[in-house]
Image (cartoon, rainbow, N blue to C red; front, side, top):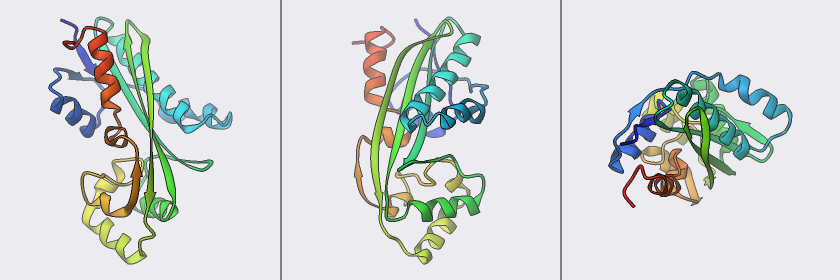
Length: 198
């Protein structure tokens, strides 16, 4: 039976695979994401391509350490026009980021890559479009007080499965893409690859 490894420390990604009934281990990748993405940003790569490159780097890094396993790497980027956002460094940065996104439609690009024997063998990127409502600064203060440090856990400073849903007025796209793991395409690949029963 193929050993399955998730190359991500994300609690949400672990939960999604757990809930889908998969048996897997977790081994976080040892990659410097900022140094990988710096030349891509300089070359004006679109956010979805950057997500794919980062997901592949994570999957391949862990796959080189566990060549017998099938390794799942994932990454998510957030783009607003030409701007690209990373996870905020602190609460002040998170507040500024949410104010920048307020009243705008941004794209969440979620990439998933599977690797075996140190080589990427499958890639997929999905995009969801999310429109934030024009919330008041007072509401933002209440929201940030309620979620606390959890605001730093995601690139968008929100979790739709919690109070973050109240920041939005419209969402177009797959829910699992928003959570950071395009689950349906991944499960299809795992069935095709023989890891899951068809």
